[in-house]
Structures are given as structure tokens and as C-alpha cells.
Amino acid sequence: ENGRVTGVPLDNSNRLKIFLDKGVNKGLLDEQASELLFNNADLKQYSELMMDIASAWHGTDTSGADGEVVREELATMFINLADYFDDQGFAYGSSLGTVHHFGYSLRPLFKAHFLMRGVLDERNRVERTQQMLSWFAGAGRIFEPADQIDSFNIDVMNTQLQGILASILLISDSNEQARWLSQLSQWLSASLITSPGTAGGFKEDGSMFHHSQHYPAYGKGGLKGLTPVVYLLSGTDYAISPQAHALLRNATLMTAVYANQNTTLMSVTGRHPTGEQSMETDPFLYMALSGTSDGQHPIDREMAATWLRLTDSPAPVLVDKFNALGIFANQPAVGNWSMNYAGLA
Image 1: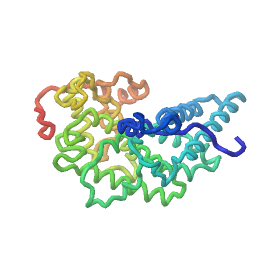
Image 2: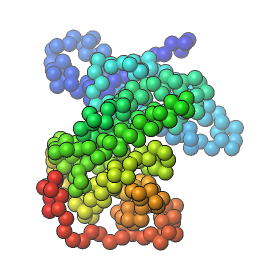
Image 3: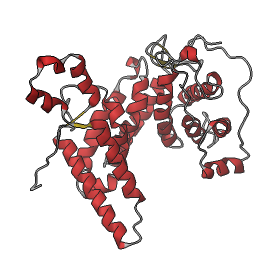
Image 4: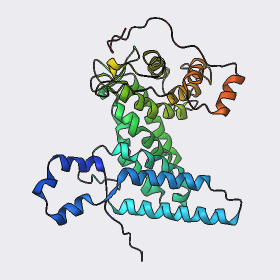
């Protein structure tokens, strides 16, 4: 209003939990200070709202005049909220005191800004947005020297990797964008094949390590965040290496073995012993569409057949595509496997 951005404070509930755990609500703050600290808009809800607006903008029928009006209103709403986000300190270079577990809250926001890149460009917000996404996704990590990579954090795969790619795709200079994409590919390939001992990442036997153990509850989120990026890079000059692809493929395929059919073994549920931990099926689809590890075939037939067997929500277009290639749902795994890192046999 009148050139000024106004709104209630925006903060991350995960970060505020630290203050609550430290007892700031137990007499350490007066009523005014407590109101200032805790009466705010939640970052995750904000991110989800931005994704809803972006989806509505893309889903609006523009064949009539009313559709154009609605789209313009949605675009203005998105830009106003983006300006509010920046005004609240969520900007390139800002630590906001501490950036604590922001990835879980920002996942929808990364996608929303990429989807609205055209609107952001029209309103001269692309450069600011690109820098902000790069900062909060931690994109600078991809320049870590290869000889210093000693693990792959599954939380990064799950919550930040797609944000890193989105930030790179918003770089306006094509040469600079190509440099970042090349570095992303190299870093991703090196990270995928580097996981000694109990370090985080993927093992040769298909184990997925987090918190120094095979941890499917986290691993499935890692696969869900990682495999779409691998798919988007596949078939380009920035595809991950064959060795990295093969290791990721095996880790994905093994989830169908130790979760046969869909529920994870209780012995590897860690601190989630609910009996309801299930595997993710989307990674099978993305690996199928990423082609074979050697790059010789655009569709990985085994991964496609496994996805057809496991998915609860098959997309008709993809089912028809696979069936036309002679690919149909396969049979559940039968036999014996050993996963020494996971302590499974």
C-alpha cells in the first residue's frame, strides 16, 4: 500500500520450536515480546499458498476475457507476496538469525517460483528471485571440491536439491547457466558414489544411510527429491555419470525388495516404528523415464514394469506409453538377498 509492503511477521515454525524448547515462553519474555516473537505467519503455509497460486495461474482458462482477468489477479497476488517475503528478510545473504530446517518448509516455494518465472520476468523480479532461491537452497555446495566430498546428505536430496536446480534454471545468462549445470552434474555424480562406512548416502548393496544407518523413512524422501532431478538431467550433456545412475537405480530397486510389497520392514523403521512406513513409487517412474545407466535406451524397462506393479495412481498416458512398448506390470520379487550395510538378509 502506497509503495510499502506490510503484513504480520513471517517465520519458520521449526526455528521457533527452538525458542519454545529453551523455555522462552516460561517467564523469559514479557507479553509484548512473546506476542512479537510467536504471533506470525507460518513459512510452510506461506510456501504452500504460493504453490497454490502458481498452480491456479497455470490452470486458468484464458480463452475468455474473464480468464485473463483472473490470471492477472493471481499474478499480482503472487508478486505482492514475493515482495512481502523479501521484505521479511528472506533474501540473498540473509541468515535470519539461524536458517534452521528451512528446506522442509520451502520445498513448495522453490517449485512455485520456477512455475511463475514468466510473471517474475515481466515484473523485473527474476534476478532477485534467482539469488534468493540459490541462497536458501544452498546451491553453493555444488562447488565443493570433489576430493572433499565424503557423503551425501539425504535431507539435501529431499528438501533442497530441486531448489538448487530451479535456481540454476532461473539464471538469465546462458553461459553462466551452463557452467552451473555442468557443476551440478559433476557434484551430483561424485556425491552419489561417495558414502564410505556409515556416512550418509547410497551403498553398493542398495542401503540408504542417514543418521549412520540404513533408514528407509528418510531414504524414500531422498529418492522422491532426487529422482526427478536425475530425470530432468537425463538425455542432456548434464546427465549424471553411468556409475552414479547404476548405484541410484539399485537403491531404488531394492526398496521393492525389502518393502515387498509396499510396507517397510519394522526392523529398519528406526524411530518410526508405526507399522505404517511405506515405500515411494514415483522414484521408479522417474528412473524408468531416465533411461538405462549406459544411456543406450530411453526407457528402463525393469523400472517401468516395477512402477506399473506398485503404483496406486497410474497415469493413463504413461501406462499406455509403456504398454505400447510391450512393458507390463512385473511380478513381486522372489528369492534371497543380502544387504550387509543394512544388516538384512
